[in-house]
Amino acid sequence: MIKILIVEDNEKIRNLYTEMLTNEGYKVASVPDAMDANLLLQDEHFDIMLLDIKLPRVHGSILSGI
Image 1 (cartoon, rainbow, N blue to C red):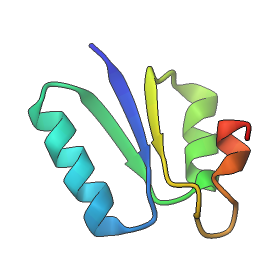
Image 2 (image 1 turned 135 degrees about the horizontal axis):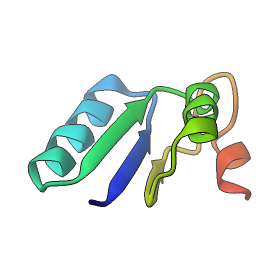
Image 3 (image 1 turned 30 degrees about the horizontal axis):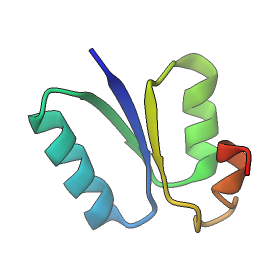
Image 4 (image 1 turned 90 degrees about the vertical axis):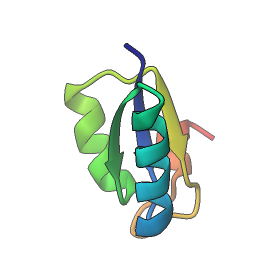
């Protein structure tokens, strides 16, 4: 099963993506910022990451390698 990580600070958008992708059969985890994503990525592998670049506390480019 494909695992997707959603990193999005807007709760409504994050929940919408999570619901849509879960309904399509994907395993989805979602977090509100790059700090939480970094912690999750230390312990878990994801096939795809949907990443909002303009995040609070830490810019999303830290995770994407931009």
